[in-house]
Image 1 (tube, rainbow, N blue to C red):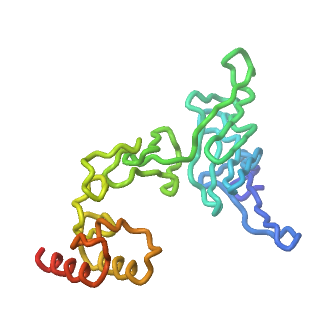
Image 2: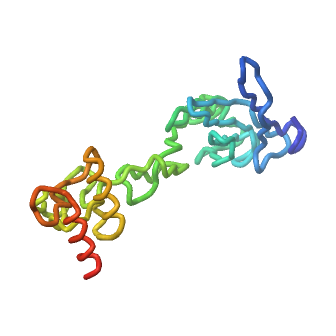
Image 3: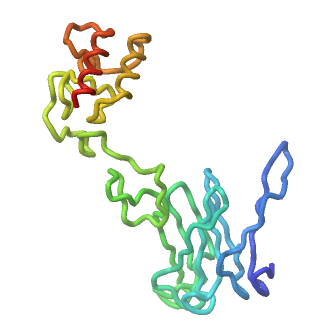
Length: 231
């Protein structure tokens, strides 16, 4: 295909609907050029992320590179070998799964002329330094894949503070903080009212039992309102 110049290349996406394949979209790289042959190799994972090969010239003639597209078919990143050289044809073969990507470079010369090599990347994950699964090596950060410690706990599940009398890590006892956000406000009132009308709601009863009578009722709500107004 010649959208970005002679033999620049492209990829056509088709969608299976009612047992028929229908045209969906056409992909061309943001920096495509003459003779790149974008689409010379392709791999798709179960979540419809794509790796697409291109014999472009970023590290020399026909050195090669690859593009990653997300499941909305948006270009996310371009990758080429850190030690790439002309005629390596990096991305001549590709495999992508949920987190890892393998790219063949069939004419790489590390062990002799055209001996070939393969590159392994962890292309997708979490690179938020505050997350428990932070990984500085990922190329595309996906916020939904980040895992964070619970409030007042570290990532291995250890409580960072003392447990209160309600067995809450870092808690302040029966102060009415129903959602454990360290602030008592109308949100806690709503949660306690919901509990009174539906005791199947999962709340720490000790925390919302402000008068410590082991019964959750209007008295606890009144005490909570008084606490809110006094603060």
